[in-house]
Length: 418
Ligand SMILES: O=P(O)(O)OC[C@H]1O[C@](O)(CO)[C@@H](O)[C@@H]1O
Image (cartoon, rainbow, N blue to C red; front, top):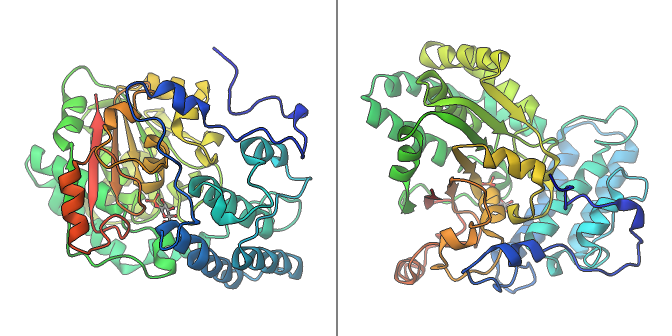
């Protein structure tokens, strides 16, 4: 096995070394695809990404500041980050940070520049790292390991909407097999709309157009049912109201012996507000197993599956890297290569899967994911501009409606390849 390419020998890194950020792997491995689409940036007037930097990030820093009783030093650090966000001026991590050199290697060309001039994926990811720095998540002291987004996650998980959603598992359990599987898949897919980053500025669209712009649901179930059961990887996205239906789907795969094991990939640290960490999985399991009816039974089964090793939690550090999956290290690639199916959840994972680039919408999904070492299906509500595998007539038709269909979560896709 080769050494991990995304974590080179940091010792050689110098602050003034201007070698470019990684991107070459994607170019080399996407045989047959248009490999030269430019990365999505935030510095394009009217662009969705610009709004994320201009509106959402300052709003988020303010909310984090108010959500927990941070000490004066932490409040000061958060205020500095807020100023940086408002002034659109990025600063590097403090040189004492454990991953200072890693971030230099990932993007020294962007540091000390404008947030909006760096690739959207890179800059957003770095913003969340800087937020953890400001709250003292990795520093010695009382705030070490305290999830700054926990109050938001907790509020969502305890809400009465979740009670209703869990109760609906009784109805789903009574459905014939095929309908049950469709219901579980759609619940996991649309659960992706319940994303706390969207609730920050109230941008979530009305639930008026529930259309799928791509529906490879049949492909997903054929990968599950045809052939002997194998390992299924689920690359989770958000905690709370998204993770609960994901867990229900996983329970079905395990209980019906459609998978020998499920490897659930979650984030090793708080990220993009609501992204699931191991603590969030445990909170979700507590919520499930404390519920009456089918939800409670599923929770008990899943806890048992963790103990027996049929459900495995994985927290690979690459999950929080500002890079596309085409740059993934071998240690992660091996996981996906061993799986009979990988299901990726959510918008950010989609951006990382296909590359966060200005692809023409009809760029083939198979081409841009040719590097991925096994069958893969993405479940995603559309919450940012990137899109592939959709005919130009379809995307042009949707554009003509004037609806902000690419970014408001009103449309979704199930998109994959064997
Ligand atoms: O939770 P998801 O589906 O990954 O969506 C998060 C999305 O929200 C944003 O943070 C803001 O648009 C996107 O950058 C990101 O793709």
